[in-house]
Length: 193
Length: 211
Image (cartoon, rainbow over all chains, first blue to last red; front, side):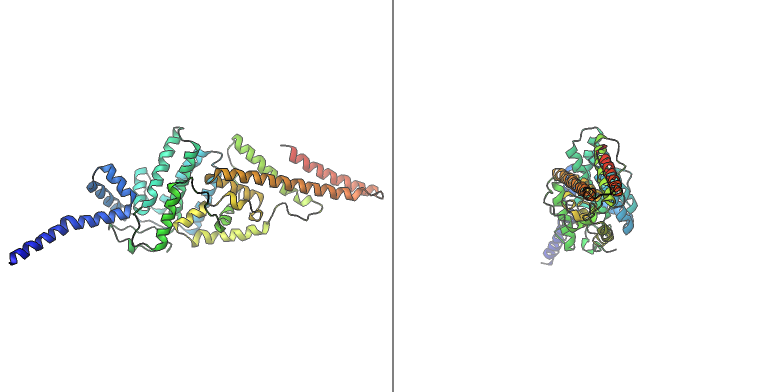
């Protein structure tokens, strides 16, 4: 009789290891990255490599030291942004490019790598997954505008999307992304300096 | 959006959902309540109006408007009977400059920051208490991003307001000078003063029409 119990126990353990744990990890990744998760699964074609990619991002993000901006710097950037925004009616393409530049400036100042667009997006997907779509769309429009293929309304949209990202970057208390996949409840409260 | 069902502080969720709502359809922000923060940020760049705009035709037009605005303000001290302020609420600017900091610093969550950046807009700019014409113009212009049509309506309204104000103040000034020489007892000295006053008025009109 005991051998039956042993087999049963082994089966249970196997089920946990093979099915439950990966599922839990998937779920927590999915929760964390939201639409970015689904997008990546679509792009990669399979869940496993998408998840490996996302875990890789979290790991890389964990090696970065992200700083908050000084209040004075935050204020200065906000004012700079408004000046750019006011010039939109005179030079829409140019101001969208400047908006992108300001986003990158703030990212760099806060400690993110900024050399490659992909790298910027990936780090944003860790800290601000809900804004990654904004970033991608804005960037696409901007590329079109460099080919003179973006309408003024497109440019306006790009500007707004950059702004959403920018203002999030100006805000305090970015989640301290550890190397773990979940644990979001351990995050310092936003706004805590 | 299934991203944040769990664990995060409530305000975090709100901020993000709010933001998503905005950004998924960026053209649909018309009803955005731009409330008190709007005033603060509208004044965020009191210091320098955006003058370094490029030499496009449009920007020249805009500068023309700015110049006219300035002239109305410059001419203000010459008014004989200054009972109304052409440039409203100068002292208020200092107040609002003080209030910029709390907004930027004490309310750092994401959606607030968006609001902080967004609210330069036509709505508050139409409240004459908001600041100088220049501040209001700048605020209107910055709002184009969010609501082009309403921004243009506001620009039109502000131009009308300045025009009316200018006509009124010049008319008042003229009537004041008229009253000082038209009585039959006016001496030659009175007439000299009147002549000087008319000359000032004339110069002001010439400045206004020189564009």
